[in-house]
Length: 88
Image (tube, rainbow, N blue to C red; front, side):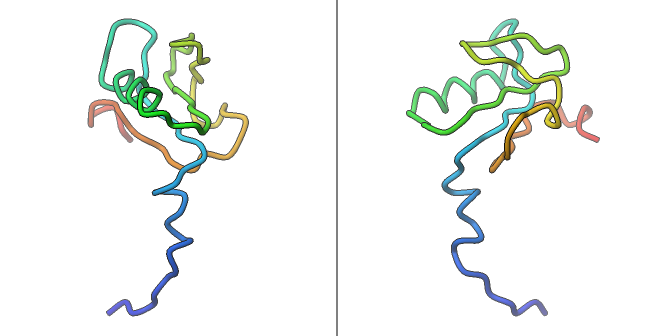
């Protein structure tokens, strides 16, 4: 049985992220990933947003990174918004 307790600061990056990568955002059409990205902007998320798609491009004034490794800073939270068969 696991009994170690953590303080709430260990969850801060999940509940109060300073940066979010959204994997599966496309510059073409309005898919699930783009919907998440737009919702984050609409609710006033004031941290860094990093859309990710292997095709790259741009969406809503943000560069789309071809992969998570290309993002130039630390990511606090990642949202995977692609079909299950595309997730390794």
